[in-house]
Length: 81
Image 1 (cartoon, rainbow, N blue to C red):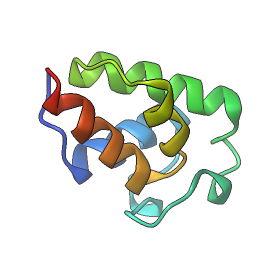
Image 2 (spheres, helix red, strand yellow):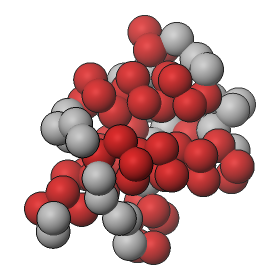
Image 3 (cartoon, helix red, strand yellow):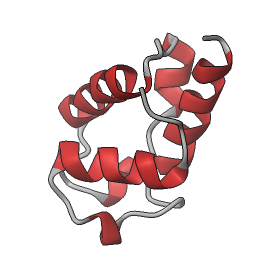
């Protein structure tokens, strides 16, 4: 289980979507990356839950359509651990 932080979230998205981490940042939205489609979103959520040892709620998943939203969702879920 890793600590939730921006670098870890960026690396996770980079690994899952197979895009360079340098192309991702806090303001990156799913719409900015072709691979971040609905299937990509599911893969990101599953990988994030496994890596960070959390379970995201449906509301959190709905707000996790970009790096900032995913980071916030994971931080909220980590507080419930």
